Length: 199
Image (cartoon, rainbow, N blue to C red; front, side):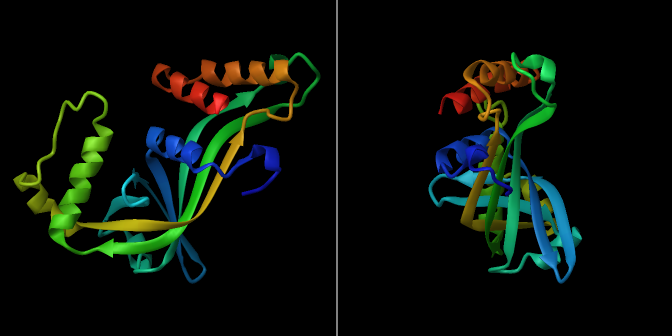
């Protein structure tokens, strides 16, 4: 992603925090000169250090997802327009945001039981923290769906985080921009963004 360096982060833990909080990602691949883009939930597996997801087999992007094919996965965190009236000093309008780009190699999951496992683990992750629903491996509804989805992993080869949060402003204006961004967030995300600013 475009510099400047003060907006970049190479801290995997910060990027993992974004991925966990905002798992609805953008999967980007290409065939020849044609780009393919799909928006799907993508989960970071702590044990393997890989991304895990599944996609509808009818999606034309599936043809580009061959073993060892390179893809980019984009996780979009919070963002907000920052008006000059937020600052204590003269500034121009800007947009603050958090984005994580991960590049990696695809590995298709062909085994039906392994595919079911990805569905169970993804559901378990997405049901946090209350876990009001639990998907079981022997749920017969999965048997009816299994032939219609393609599960896959992404082995991450490059991490890139962009945290454009007015770091180039003075301390007071930095805090003002932070408050403006937090003000526009849903309640559940306010604690997350406070942690990102502190780290």
